Image (cartoon, rainbow, N blue to C red; front, side, top):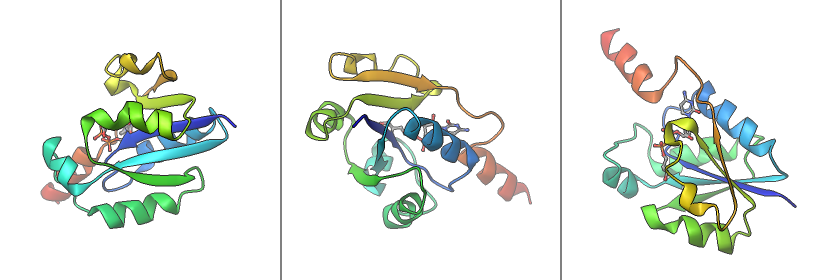
Length: 129
Ligand code: C2G
């Protein structure tokens, strides 16, 4: 079984997120999503509109997602890859190169970000409405 992993906040879930998850899952047979907790988001300088449990519930309803686990720290990736027997690490290409240190442990794949949509854009548009 080819196991894929990806990380993120996935706030205000939109088609850019779904397209990332769909393409990540298509690289293997199983997709683990490591979801940033509210506390970790603070470390990332982000404040999600929906809390961890709400974002987890949404992700678990997506057919491309097999399991959702918490992301609590920047340095958990190697442990996650080893303990979950991951073959492929996937992120959007806004992270291009940032996770190449994982190549000794699994394949690393950066997928093209979906243009013209982001959580920030949604928030900005709603603020102007
Ligand atoms: N994404 C995308 N297209 C968009 C928006 C997001 O492909 N239009 C991808 C991002 O590249 C990322 C994933 O969707 O791979 C989740 O996006 P975020 O929730 O913004 O993730 P981020 O905050 O960058 O968290 O340890 C890594 C971090 O947790 C990554």
